[in-house]
Image (cartoon, rainbow over all chains, first blue to last red; front, side, top):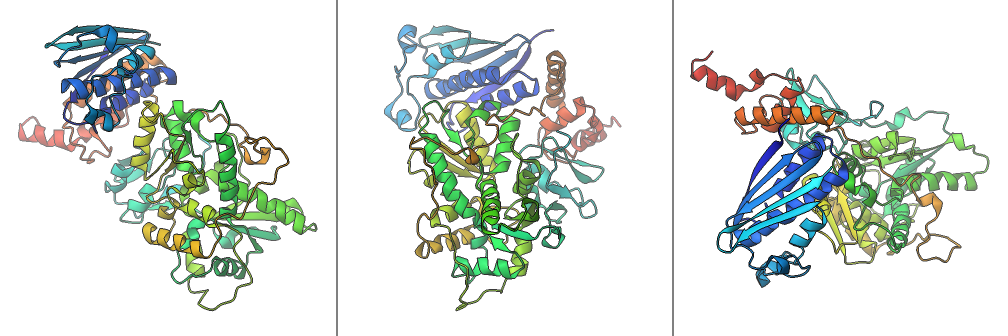
Length: 139
Length: 426
């Protein structure tokens, strides 16, 4: 059986709609009977990714591949790219503007949280071209 | 959950199969089949929203009637919810209302607001415990608790393991009656909750998770309103006086419970859509700094319940006006134990673990569920995606699910049918 794939466009203009894709995925995973902790980890990782794409990259796409034993989340954008991945992975490090922070985002926990809640996080990024994140949550 | 007794039902003669309730149901539990609404019992959380929005009065909340109380009960105790205090124009003293309940034939009245104050104190103690999951989510609204069990399995452990005030009140009232009237036997005493909503009826009939309710009857506020309206006027000197403080009375409005915790790090949201958004945010870890979350299924809190009479905001204004007549608190826990986080057993739910109920599951076999999901996705792409409701499902998405489950056919989509007609395919 080939992986079941869900595709979402993440709108870069709108903070209030960020997270809609992760809510939709959460419901589908519940309907397919995945365990609650798997659903929660996917949901948090994907939510952080969505927010990141809104803050930094003017939106992007989210693809979720569901297989019986693992869930793969691929987030792709055409934003500025990440110049120093190691630095970006540090908890609390953020390049968000003061304005974004006053909205309650940009605490520098996005990528660290994505790593914490998934089995693997792969980052492909090029400055000025964009970023592709591939996360795997094992069941 | 075949044995679950619901408190929202349908009068098939009045239902014309319109889509008002269909679109409003927060758990997508309603379908229109053969021209009338059908409620999926395993998804219904008895929130009563369909009762509120039905234009044809076909959706009804099921309540007991005062006249149906079994004569074997020699001592009948009314448990008025604090929302009742806001229903009457010209009620200047809570005591007048309590007196009117006695005049109606009740043997005693025990205000739920009194227990709300005790539950606030227990919650403050619970919040001091070191190893609890935060934010703690209130357990007072049964529709919210049922929603969490259906849709937010990871949040079940955040729900406050303390009895809702009405249950505590029922137990305390029975105990008090036995002490004051030693001639009574326990089986001769009954409690009659005057409820603002059907969800609380459902709670009394089914209990909460594994905690059985001691409430014997639940009557609707609307029913009591009719019997009491005009029974108390200015200058009437009632023998009854309220034994509650304003802190307990405020539980009837959104934010009233959270205010009783003396912490600023709380959130109170009312109305189902807002509550669902907050629960989604908690699940995503978006509310890390919060200590407590109070959620109410009805707009404005219990004053907005489907069995209330008055506009919720008017009722709220009236309730708050009692602050000039009532002290802040009147009811306190009497415990010997000096530990600041000690909670007496009689305030705790019997089993703190809420079990997750997964009725949304397409199949118990994950591979089969995945195959069905793939089919749902395919069908959804063929649909108009305008969520018109004409097929009897609330959204095109749920229609696709129903087709795959074999509950309806593609031909039930009138938009597709019309397109085929226009293209000469039929």
